[in-house]
Length: 158
Length: 373
Image (cartoon, rainbow over the protein chains, first blue to last red):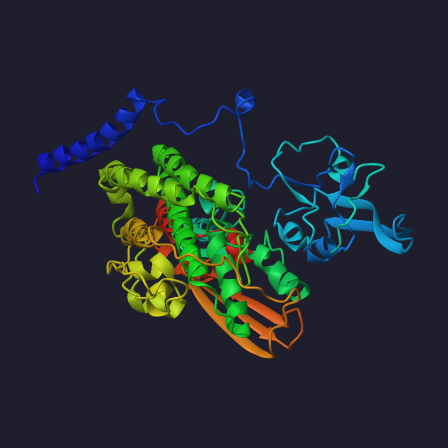
């Protein structure tokens, strides 16, 4: 291989690579996958299954589906879920029934593994797609999922 | 002063230098203690443990369902395959036969994971040897795979989509279309990778003949994955011990005999083609059926020892479970590919320059959480 042949081949490979980058330089915005994140908040829609945080949906009369069976608490690998419960008299049957007082969820500890939602027999908790969770103090990340004054929907048994 | 005394005082000593733990080329928090003579490396000593989280000990505390999500955090670039390894171990121990649909979906997502991992490796490897463009191109194509994962599994990196007995939920209706679109897209992009980097004269000079590992050394160091195959050591678990739906597909095991950095690079580029071919064979005929079989809420493995190995993007991952019949494993040991592959770094880097060390470390494709666990 001659000295000049080497130089020629070297320059040729560099130009081949530059033809790739040059193509993208000229058509830079076409097919770009970068999202203009804080500016596109209005149009940004996360996928339905995206794991943002665990929430407990309530209906319009402030009723949820959680019976306080604690299966999510047992399924959680690192204790992100704590359930404080007591037995209260059910007004319909007159018997004592297990009810949740507080369903506490530590978002700061959650690893988003999804085992609690998988374990829930009554679909009381589900994923929300909110991912903007930055706060000034860690204690804000501890949330009580059931709203104040809410009760379990009638007829939900685990 | 006597000249002889002055000369004896000039006797040179070994010069130590730290590379890492926060060095970009160490791919995480890995500290390398280099003993150098000028720019020639005399010894490389990896210092591990900066992100040790005692995952193996935590596994002894957790139930078998909970162990799966910990393996996401080991080799985070092939998290699905890690999950699969634990699930296969539990399923083998319980003698559960998972539906065909589960096997095929697991294989497809596993190969997508491998593609994503190799794309990221290609990007950072180019950056390590001085080509910043590759970083953006690699991440651009990987983004599409991450979208597929996010839509179907719910997360982009730590997916935790496998559970013992099947999958957490069924695939998303868009999954097949998105995967096909991606394969069609990436088939036009992968030749660009070659044109941009593989043929480049500077890249060739940095890679060829650097960090040579012979086949005998690869075997004795326990090198697996593309590192072993770049030295001609046929070690693909997918070929030798097929799991899930890998026995239904045909693919070639890529082997190179040179054993240098360029050989390891070429093995990974070729593996991307093979992975795409595997996905294409499976994506059109995903069998109908259930996406999981019912298991007990509390899984108790029978008394005994169980081992399962899978091929992650980095090599052979083994899961070894010792069970005493309770709901937790008595001992769980991961044989991680990164640890064995890192152990040969001293062997291939001694005698080379510091720049060569960076290049050969990039082709080892180490992920530090996998090494430290």
